[in-house]
Length: 179
Ligand SMILES: [Cu+2]
Ligand SMILES: [Zn+2]
Picture 1: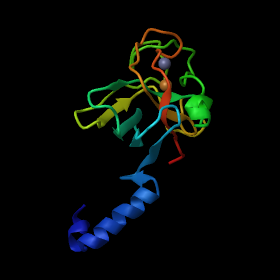
Picture 2: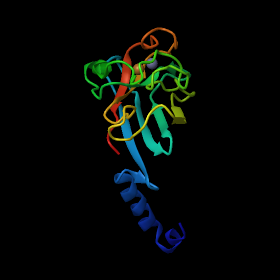
Picture 3: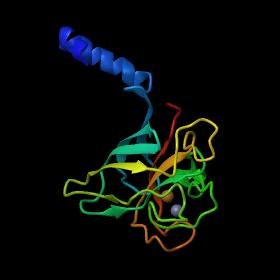
């Protein structure tokens, strides 16, 4: 972007901010969501920021979750309904447009809503960036996650227990907005 060099840093930052607000970074539709704590545990400092960006095949899911117990592991999924009410329970089960069974992210036949488990570092922060080929941001597509919920659980996912991996209460939740 050579023309960026000709404008001031302030203008460049403003231009970036406008692009982000339009939900289109570099021409790829993108949706940033804010995970907020539920009342499932007390106290609950769990918060996060996660960006969903459309790829040619799939979606990049990137961000961080803060306020976790240092070193802890947490089930992390996209749930079917875009409703974080009732301490996240209103979001229903894992997003599952293909009639799969619960398993690991990327495993054949698993739910489209599976994500890799969150692993908190020594500061209680989990950072991640992954390509998810099971979902899309395409309006009307069966695998579109627009209007669904992103959920962080208190406990690790065992990837075995049906239909949700036995990862305990839902401690943070966000609805994935349209880019
Ligand atoms: Cu879940
Ligand atoms: Zn699942």
